Length: 558
Ligand code: GLC
Image (cartoon, rainbow, N blue to C red; front, top):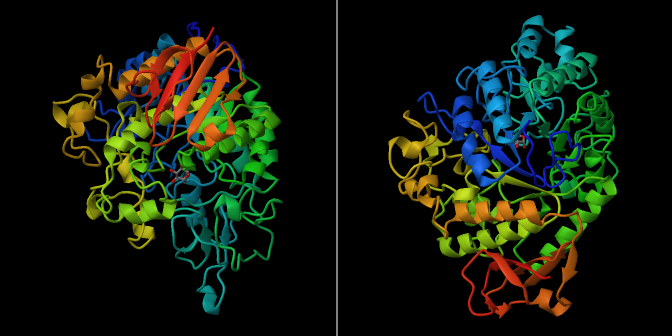
């Protein structure tokens, strides 16, 4: 890997990820090189210069493995291959070589909780019948009630409906997500060994790290009799017990699995890195981020927080304390492939909850009408705030273009299994997965010549990368400038709050980093006094010594 200065450090730096900026690619929606309407790996490779120019340190690819796309690729049929519609292993190697040349690291997504129902093992399990060794790799049980016609337990699927589906011979299998995503039995040694093989397979191909999907789900209590959940059917982090006693989620035994993975990671120089997607209580997050485990854990509290200075300050403090306790750094995320894009979230009334947003999506984003100018202004301010925080920032493709959520997709165009499984009561996540606009004109705004798998809305070209490049006021140039500056400004992992308590209460969030770097956010509808210092970058136009509403500036003092 080529030598490059900056927060991610030199090639063999074991801590390269600690303050890295990691860009998430959702491959099917990124760039389509072969014109079949699905983004692919050669498409990713051709756009890597855009990412190097943007200034990110690493690229994390959501699943590109063979998949029936029952859940956008999170239903993996073969963990050590590339979906033929997305390319070949040679294409993967070519992508790594190009990333290397550009000084970018590659991370891939590992989906260990469940496979696809098209996975060889699951097909074998179906064919082999009840009581067979092949069924032991998954979770098959007899049903309850007359003729075993009822599911074995009351466990719900995260996507709606029961977590059990009956097969032809009458047994039921467990799927905490879609029926096309059968859960593995992690008590089975072959399952454990196979994932070690997968981790080595991609590490040997030059991957620097992994994002671990649903990392808190693997170690289930499958002892007979299986336990019903009764009234406690929620899987939300705040509703899970603090002591790890839930039969399905966040059980302590999961960490034994990750200690084994750590041994695999440590076979490499530098050691491979992993970040856990674990929807657990904050107090339970540190175990996933341990240096003896995966190394880092996503913190979605920042994403879920309102743009309120006091609330954000508390959220940031908690995240930094948790990360410090774990020996890791915190992660910061504003958008990903599972949530409404943040300029749109911020365009909605401040008091809107997750449930309100889901209900609003069902109105196709019409009621109430979002204030998109305000949303973008707030998004720019939140971005500069996030990029000044110590830790790793995870960007989601298209946020550097200021893309909004696409809210007008017709019912019949939706692909997210949540839509069908919820009986048409939750619209789902397609609106943040619409293929990117690269050029303001041309076929499908430069995404590719084929009809995109999700339609791009009218006006999508106005967000195109080629229009924004070189325009100092564009979102793209804001991200580029911020990432360029950040490389020089990051010295260590310290953050010191500045400003009085009453200033914070009135909406001013001000902190400093070592070396005289200040980030000051005005998260209110009134202008505020701008602290002294040389203005390095501002999320919005400054107004004579004042910090305008919903603006973040980076300042430097001697
Ligand atoms: C994770 C992924 C999400 C997927 C789910 C099941 O939450 O981010 O996209 O649907 O896991 O694999």
